[in-house]
Image (cartoon, rainbow, N blue to C red; front, top):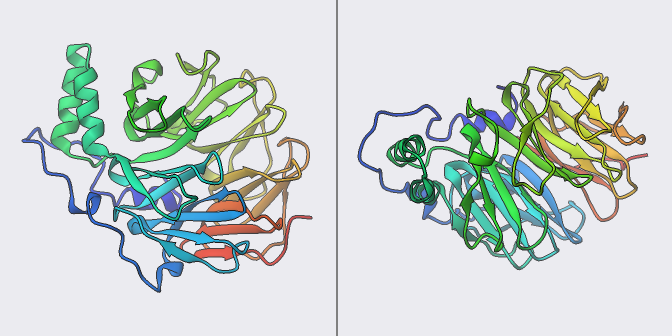
Length: 347
């Protein structure tokens, strides 16, 4: 496991199962608001999203930063937790969600100005226990309750303001149909008997896709009712999925690996990225081109729907975790040194 996100994840109360014990109390960081600090702009930031013309960055200790000037300056927004946030998505300029350590899910309905907690690892374990339909499911849920909320959510995908998914470690997968007011366990819909970590989820061309550790790829052609295993061309971990406007798909991950599919994952072609460090993020740009970001800060650009990528001559803030495009076309990178607007736009 590599990459800034996963490094931080290993620091999150441990991922290894513990001996069965009485259910522990929720950690204080799940109920304590993030500390507001003038130095928040230099914190480790792990994910970026556009909220209309606004940029929203999330990161360690529950820190959320907002920029209304295309990434030139940032201010901190209050949040109700002090756990690291690793993924964020907005479906409208106002409605967004963020997920992270200890199974936390935050929601905003005012463009990131304020956030409230919708779900956490304690609630996730209790929800699984109530929904358990077999002795094996009941046993697994009881173990999660005994472990405490030490399992992170790693990504999210919302199709609209109501329907979305959160995914995470050990095959954690929940679905909502009411904007996150309630969550249903959904891992039984995925053929993942080893409970491998799920790192990314995206939709393309009428299908839903999941990507994870050890080359794990899943696809749903029935709106998420079932996810079938795809034959993977790669045995290393995939950290995310990038989708093109035409439905093409790029799976990216360890050691600069990227693979392209134009047939809903039935076949894959390796993409020569020219980088050796992990690919940590990918986005579709306003002009229809695609961009990947390496952990080393390399920006790779594709103008052929992901079949090939060319390394761009931008500055390199190290190490890098997330990428977004500002309203003026500039690229913005988040990572160990906060959030940086790159010196030049894509050409």
